[in-house]
Image (cartoon, rainbow, N blue to C red; front, top):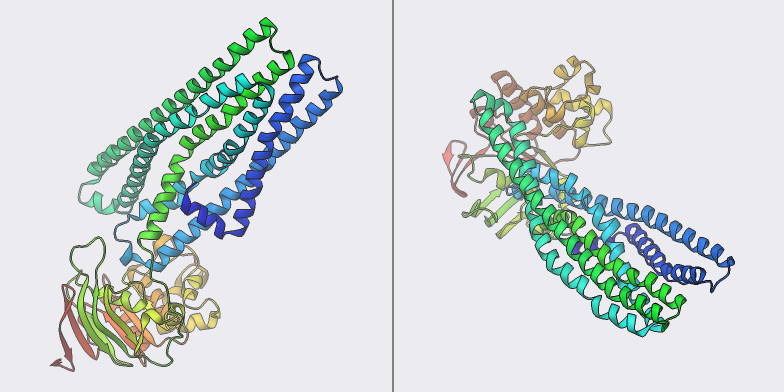
Length: 551
């Protein structure tokens, strides 16, 4: 059993309960085959009277009921596991933020969380119950065969291990080719989403046809990987069926000869012939369902790899200090796993309470990483981040982030109303509070002009709004956030026209009043808001200016 999935199922009480019912139903249905074979052999041989037919019908009915129960609870198990795993995966991605996900394409993550985890159905509803049945039923059949006919039982005992041995040999190859096939599917999903998002740019530069050819090549690679997987799966079925058929022949031929010679009674012969296939069937089904479930297992491995490889530190429990804080970085170095050079190296910096600091420098120099450090999205490889002298790693991050107002460079707007997008800052905010926040962010005017006003549904990623309008809604979201004492802005005026920039700068000035503010800026108008300008170059603080003097 997949150890990570097992831990997940143990942690989820409802999933664990559904799984236990599923396995119990599967095992009981498998054990009832012994009763069914006993009754059927007796009826066919004339040993039992016609009354036994009623018992046989009852056993068949109970097995059908158990099969239905297994199907229902297996479906609930699969739904619960997928929901729990998707919840943890999406929750972790939300905790990490874009800085820690640089090695993952968004399309690959979408494929993983969507279709990839859906393939766990075959593992949870088929393979896991077959493991339970294979662990119990063949042993029970063997015990009954030893009691009925020693010779046949010895033949089954010797030939039975051939199926798991050959299944394991083929299964190792199956796991390898299935993982390769899932990686090809993830690459296809990731590249296709990138191309769709960048289609206007590709068309403008005449590269759309070239990317179509690239997608065709990636799709061909996925098709080839899928066909290799299917070939191995068919080979597995052939091997398992051949082993089972030859083993059954070794049992059936001597039974027939002994019946002809009169050395074996008919009831025992029929019982052995009915039970012998049931000794092999659970192992054959386990092998078949193992191969059918491998894509889901590969998706689960990928999901747990994301969770484990990028797991954040354990959060502290201390409450956040009250008031406008001092933020201090002491010899902080941040090293991302997928980069050779540090994003920040030996940075020491003190931001006084209520001070407005502008971070300037070339793109990729480490400015956004510094914001992510303050947000708690990134953990220093070395050094400390202190809030009023308290190490950020010891603070309860939820209470700390409740004091932050963050406006990213590309604010994300959800496909819901403008009102709900602004209320993300404070879900309990009244309509009047939202309007006041919008007015402070110079957004109320254009929002009122929208067809539905504050009830207008925003397109995906704010597609029906301009860049300046999206930025002002993000600022309104920050204004709506109550009791914030720290403002973090990541190039809020990037890609804006002059009019939008002036509105955002004026709103930012009002929002930063009385708060500790850290602003990543390139444009002079935004830099002029700062009390101090700090230049960051290749991950290091190289200079700072305060009120026109070099610090």
